[in-house]
Image (cartoon, rainbow, N blue to C red; front, side, top):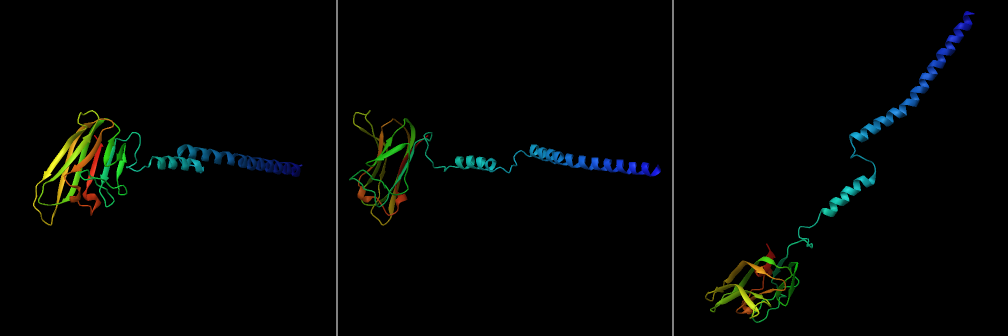
Length: 209
C-alpha cells in the first residue's frame, strides 16, 4: 500500500515538472518578441530594411546642388570675360566664348548682353589697356527701342595718360532700371589698345538686385 502511494506521488511530481517545463518554452518566444517590439518602439529610426536608409540619403543627394546652378527662380546674372578668342569691332568690345563665362536668365549675342527680365541691375565693366599719348574712352551703352536715338550711354570713363610701359585700368559700375529686350555693350575709343594677355583683366557683367 505504501509503495503504491509513493509511486503515485512520484508520477504526479514528474507530470508537474513536465507541465512547468513545457509552459516555460511556450512563453519564451513571446517574451523575446515583446522585448524586440519594445526596442523597435524605443528606436524607430533603426531598421534592417534597406529602403529606410536609402530614401533619406537619396533625398539628401537631390537637395545637394551646386550654388551656381541656374533655376527658373534664380535672379538674372551675367559675367563675361575677355580672352584671346574674343573678337572686337573697331569700337565695340567682344567677349570670349570659351572662357569661364556665366549666363543665367540673360543672353549674349554680337558683343551685347540681352535683358530678359525687367528690374534693377548692377552693371559693371573693367578693362585693362595699353597706355598711349591719346585719351582712352571706356563706355557702357544701353541699346533700347524705347529711346529715339536707339542707344543711351550709362557709364563712362576717360583715362588721360602719357605713353609708358605700364598698362592702365578702368572700372565702371552703377545701378540701372532695365527693361525686357534692352541690350548692353561696352564701347571704347580704340579696341586695339585692350590688353588680351590675361582673360580676367577684362570683365563685363550685370546682375539683378
